[in-house]
Length: 293
Image (cartoon, rainbow, N blue to C red; front, side, top):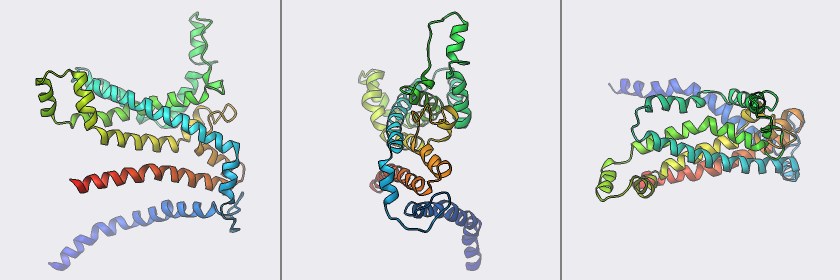
């Protein structure tokens, strides 16, 4: 009987072990190797010539990288804020038990089923002045209409925000809707008996109780913002010029196009540190909350 129990305990481990070792090698192994390359003089091919932190010093002296970080700050802050506001608003709307909820919920969630490449390509056509919205308005007789953000260096980054918000807001809505449906109805009923309006209930009771959902949404959106690559490539290609360059596109460009693998690896490690700086505090707060309960 003891032998049988041991076999039953080991079978799941044996089944999962190939996947575990593959993940260990091809995920964490390559992360470690990227970290090693960031300290070497690697160019077109990997090199073992150790140069310490020279790649990091060079990275932060590059105007190209500083522009990418600034674009990430603009894109990330707007992306997170707008997705949160729209997602929460849609979740509150659907939480009112409206009749069309079964129809609206899939419509809002549909964009998340598309890849970022498809989203970027579709929005590129929509925003292109020659074939998109501006061209359509001109055909309808509105000759003075102008919307050329995708070609304007000063506004191109906002077109990336528009496309990203359109794709992700429905997913954020689903997170908030699940949080709203998890709020204890007894608390809401007690507030209604005391004469509190719906606005007051949501502002003073429901939304404060949803702080963990807000934190989860922030972590997910921040992670998506930092590693944004395919959407930018499909929508603007990082242009015009470097107007929509982000750290992920910078990393690819320097590693595979400009043959500066060491600098590209150092930018990848900086991105990893950014993600860790968001995820580690989140995991710490979650684990501390579990211990308290």
